[in-house]
Amino acid sequence: MDAYCEFSIAAGRQLTGVPAEHPCARVHGHTFRVRLTVSGPVHPVTGFVIDFADVQRAFAPVHDALDHRFLNEVPGLGNPTSEHLAVWIWRQLSPSLAGLSAVEITETGSSGVVYRG
Image (tube, rainbow, N blue to C red; front, side):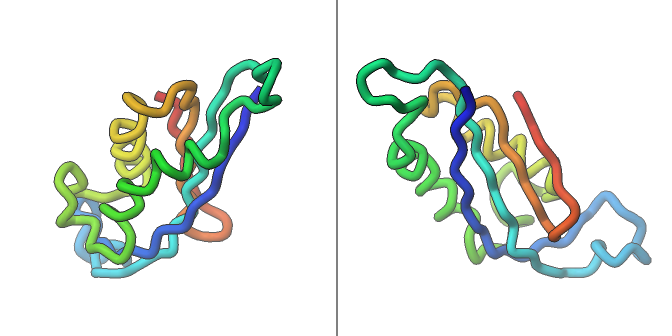
């Protein structure tokens, strides 16, 4: 079964891998939605795949590192596309968040990416 938690990150960025005339080559910002999915069996006693509070605790330092930041200045996010952001978050969380199966980043109401490690 899959369980998920969603978070919001407000951050600025400037994409460095696009032509100068591309709108995202300029400094701009998004309120990103981050959905973390954890997969596994339902525990017979708790009835949880994972306690949502455990996901929130694991994500707290990642949120602090990204929220209200200029993502280009975050180590490892030199070209902070949504794709790179998803991989970066996965790498931060996967060692400590057992069962992490997907990191979804939504940068607009209709555009986003899903990374599954």
